[in-house]
Image (cartoon, rainbow, N blue to C red; front, side, top):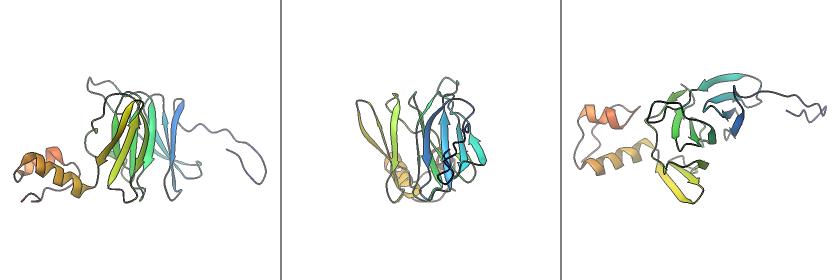
Length: 173
């Protein structure tokens, strides 16, 4: 870190392993740092105090994801998207440091860049030689997608399995 008033440089380790991705929340309150091992550490905006970490995402075969390749905060700073070189893509609640739902489907290649829409309702992801992917991430949009796919009202147990973090309610006509 560079103190602009004194010109003094201070070295700070932001992650347990080599840092591979960084993102500031839109309001500057948080700094997220991802590393080679797939872990994300969240700091205060000045990177003076660690606020906690998000564990590496397990991939399909049970092993931990490797190398965080991209990070992005939602406009309100309440959601953090983290992508891995192995194609993993997860959403995290920054307040509770808990995963929001299951991993989002990707092409399986390294996700190189992430961004939220200005209203936070969509997440955009891109990779080398892969067209821009758009994910609906607002709970209302996700619920509407589930209803379209299901074609009927969902039983409570199906809702819980498909729509994590939202209480079951009748949303399908």
